[in-house]
Image (cartoon, rainbow, N blue to C red):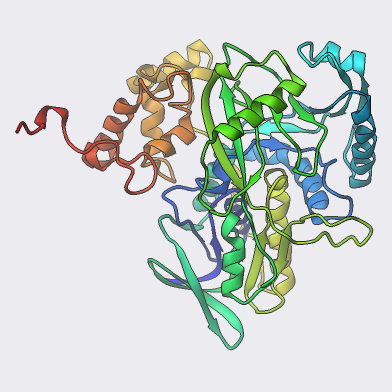
Length: 494
């Protein structure tokens, strides 16, 4: 059956959380994703920070949804059983000339409703963070800021949605709208047509293209902003908080921050690019990271880097609706005025992850206002339980798990201590992990010092065995990214 009440295009963190929220109600929901896994587009490469909310301009939708979303994270993380830590963050001023910027951010934060903000003296911030630049003149501390596991949140939200009745189709690309008498009644995809009363556009950097196919907001444009990052070896350097420089016209600047996995990350850069798939790592970007990182902590050395990556932020040109502020890009979360049947989530750059629970709630509120009829299910289950992770279990519990299933005693990834049992569990999960990168996002295999050098062949072997495919058919990520072309012992000799 190809008829639904709501179709959501894009299974990143926004689309997956919208799907989860809608799974609460007695309606039929389809979530489509053009890639082979959820959360593998814009949501796959960001800072994984839950911002406090002092940076967005007061009166903007960004400010409202950032602060509202931040308050929702404790409950969300508990229900989905994902890692989230309120470690707080610091905006650090260097030299006397940057000190006034802290007062501006403090005032913005107060107007936005951010709790607990504090100005910290030069002596106090250097006592708390001993490796800071000696020229640090003060800091703004926001205790409500935190870090999360972006991959886990997206996957868990999508799993919870599926377990509550949402239909998920991967490898399903949006190709156009079905329009009848001025109303969207469905979509064309590479897997056929699907009909719906409402369509939610949550397509990240492609949100403007999707909107324009419906004749909506022709003036709105997304120009991706590429951000490069470096991940440091945790044995070389570790920090337990988030450090921001004083922001500039290019954004929040190059951060030094912790993760839920214990690494320290440096980034991002900020460069507008024309290609919506351009995630290149560049020498210029790495030089930029070094220079800006050293402004905060001169002692850090990027030779401690074990991995680099880049992500694209969906920077749009929607103007904040507060006429008292200067021009600045804002979120778009709204029902289209030009045509019936479409809700757009567009221009969702930072703090989009922080605001994502609130964005999902806002979409539901918009749908409620349309009169679609959202009646709650009596059996809706908001809880999703993660699979066992032996690395984090007490010895006795781990031993009992191994006795039940010996595969949990076989280490496949030495750096991150990921076992065969964990990999097999993810292959057979509610949303099966069927590529190397899908396994990586769920178990963290291949993210340590060797970057997959030890585990890759073993993961390919397990994937082939569990799926019944040939090892030559196992891909790193999307179709066409197979690791192997033939068995090594079958090389032809001419």
